[in-house]
Image 1: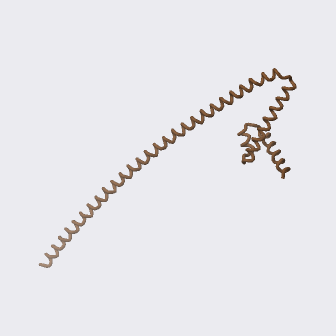
Image 2: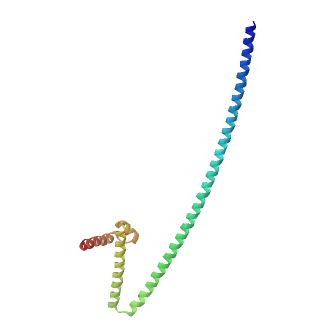
Image 3: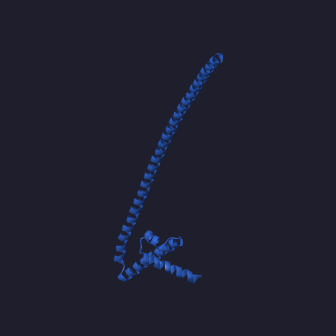
Length: 164
């Protein structure tokens, strides 16, 4: 019976060793789990910080954009005001000149004014066309009829073909 006793003692020792090993594995799993929880918490915290910094940067950029738009609007308003003042002054000057010049002289001045204005407008159309703008785009930029723009462009093309 001695060998059976040794067998039982061996089995008890084996069970105790397996039990000890399972406790060791269990504590290792607990340590890994706590480490993973800490890592997860650190990731969540860093993501919150990242989102907060992005939101802050976004707000700063938004305020810069709003300020930029306000500055541009004020500059445009100022420019419109100056152009309106110039227009008003030119309209004020025009009636005084009409009173001092007879009708024939007035017609010549008006024709000269319109021809100079048309020449400038034609030069602007030509310049924009040479820069690659389409007739529709030129119409929108200069706020004139598309037919007029197309006519000037066609004349420009013919003029260039004669010069070649």
